[in-house]
Image (cartoon, rainbow, N blue to C red; front, side):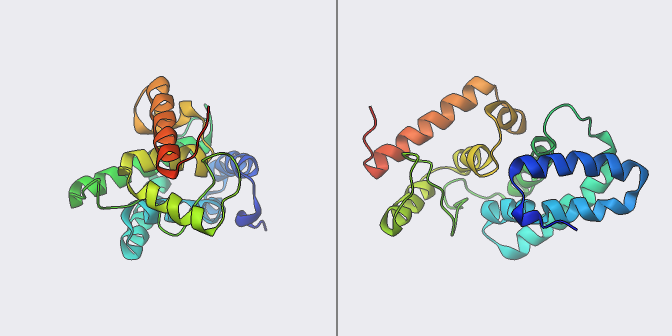
Amino acid sequence: MFDPKKLTSEEREEKSQDLVAAIRSDPQRFLDLYQLWLDPIYFYFLRLTQHKECAEDLTADFFLKLINILSKYKAKGKFSSWLFKVAHNLAMDHLRRENHSNTDQPLYGNESKAWIGGGTLDRDEIILLKQAIQTLSIEEQELLHLRFMEDLSFAEVASIVRKSEQSVKKAVYRILKSLNIYLGVDHE
């Protein structure tokens, strides 16, 4: 048995590819895939909705959907990219149905990652970064999440959000620049 929490993104990707192949001959292996992706998918939905029950419901819906569409996955690229595209579509459908506003639903709650300046942040800087991130729209926060938290390439993020790679790059760099300005970070 493996511990999904101790896997790097590359190891998770390799394990996913192996499991997808194994599931084709042994559907019982879906449980391993479920355990591998349960936390990342749940926390993705939790960040988007900020509601535990809603994130739980979306996670259950996601895995039920995954059971039905897994056979459609073609190993052309990262499994995680395909997986988050499915999660993104489910989340956007939910947000449209619930008519959530882009400005009053922060994507990041109790986490932070040092995207700005590439170093580590102290407690005050983390608080300021959280405040800065909450000024972003859900779409902007999702771009940062997919690019930096899920470690997806610009091309993979572009595929998920259905935009060109160039527009995603420009958007991410623009967002990072605005966060730098908000935080008072001076980069030449």
